[in-house]
Length: 297
Image (cartoon, rainbow, N blue to C red; front, side, top):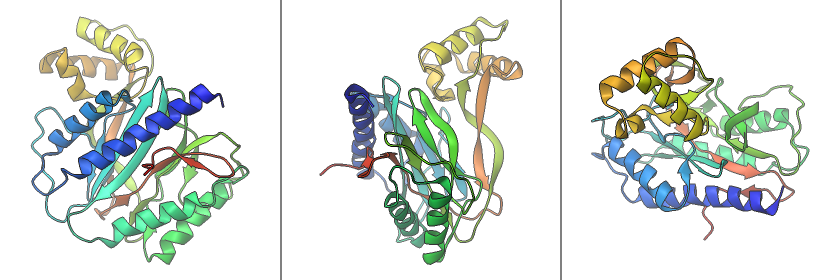
């Protein structure tokens, strides 16, 4: 990895860590998640980076892909398990991290942090998908909890926020082995017993897939923005309201979805409504791994 690329990965990761530190001061019951999301966006920009994806603020049984809508009135409530997944990039090189907030002591939160740290300890050149999955699942069992079976970690690359191969959080027999300088994100999702997520149908996050002919001018402009401004990284529907009216946005996204020009990210919920905690770091694989998203004291 070239030094310039390494420095950009480190900078992107440090931005997410600093954002986490700053927003942690405002987390409390009664906080509107839209205010929290806007603060995350502002901080990422002020620190010289850009969002790699809309911040996910997923509560209780919601595992991922919840970002507030324009005018969202949802607030954090006492005892909520609030998963905050933050991504920032410098010229396409991404830092991806997540943590869970709860106003009360919560064993799922603590377990997710311990499981992640256990997995990080085995990361080195030559480590396999099977070893990582086994470590995560066994560590969860040691904590008396389970994992979300159909959610995984992933690799990162320039403007690629979820690259292959998927890093399973359960035992498996996959022999893919990571090499020095691979960039990966580990993110165990922890619940009381092993669980699964399903699409809820609600969509506020989109990503460019391909150019397609569409009639509405705003749809063509949004597609170009998704391709050229967001560089095919995910974007939030609410971001579009800075340039387009809500009615035009809805019509444009409907057209773009119909021709499969955009990928959609439905909100993911646990099938039995079990509450979930999440922890995540971005790691550069080395004999002594570099955790880019961990705050350096």
